[in-house]
Structure formats: C-alpha cells, structure tokens
Amino acid sequence: MSKPRKIAVVVGSLRKESFSRKLAKAIAAVAPTDLTFDFVDIGQLQHFNQDLEPTPTAEWTAFREQVKSADAVLFVTPEYNRGIPGVLKNAIDVGSRPYGASVWNGKPAAVVSNSPGAIGGFGAYHHLRQSLVFLNMPTVNQPETYVGGVAAMFDENGELINEATREFLTGFAQTFADGIERHLA
Image 1: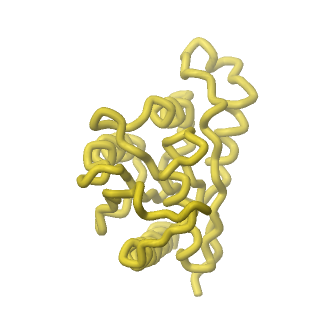
Image 2 (image 1 turned 30 degrees about the vertical axis):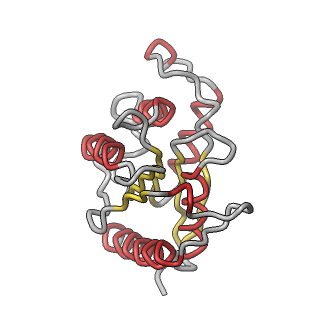
C-alpha cells in the first residue's frame, strides 16, 4: 500500500445536480483506499483582480490554503462552449497568484471532462490541460478521460449506474494514484 494522499477535488460546475460533482464522487468511491478526497468549493471566490493581491480576501486565502494542503489535484469539469467554465478559470487564476506563490506549482493532477454529448468535453479537457502545463502540474496523460453521455449514467440518487464507466474510472483512479506516487516519491 502507498502512503496516504490527500486529493483536492476542484469541480468546474456550480449546479446543484452537477454531473461533474457526481463523477468526482464516483471516482472517489472507486479509488484506492489510500487516497482521500477533499472537495474544494470554488463558487464563493471573487473574480480575480490583481488589485486585491496585497490584501487577499478571506475566501481567496482559505481556498489557497485548502489546495496547498493537498498532495495532488483532481479537476472534474463540464465543457462550456468548447472550453472550461469561467468559474473554474477564475479558481485557477486565484490559486496561481501572487506571482511566484502558486498553490498549483508541482502538484500532480488529473483531468476528467464530461458532457451530455458524445465527445465528452474534449475541448474543455484540452483547454484545462493547457493551463496545467503552464502551472507546472504533472498531469495524467493516459487514459484521456472524457465522459460522454453523462446525463444517462446516474440514478435519481446520483449513484453511477453505468458499469463500463465504473470500470473505466476505477482504472483511471489507480493510474492517478500511481502517478502521484511516482511524482512524490
């Protein structure tokens, strides 16, 4: 068994019945038991404004500390207009500042995108990965994790009912765990 690791989970959707949040919970449920998942709320973050850097808001500070305390980060996002939602981009910007003090720097990461459509958030996945390269976050390369048809994968209680997806997410979670260990060893 590997060392216990804390994963900050950043969900790119604020919607109450968010498919992204349901997917993140499904991943946590099938992940190796040495991983714990800490869901980070991004909905309360004020829009990034460099003028606020000298006196960051309490929400910015709490967010940064929560991410900083994690060993790795799991991003689960829907696709909006072939990219990531603005609220997720804002969280990335808040965490990356002030210059030289990014909470993202060097943290292993994984990206899961999703869409009710067939291509599973391909655009959002690659949009987000582009930012993570700049932020120096070593990211799981394979499997690329786009989940299409997500609207039909959960029951009325938010439980994953698609067995093929459960198996895929189990393998993905193990690959992520292995990548964290390789990076942090």
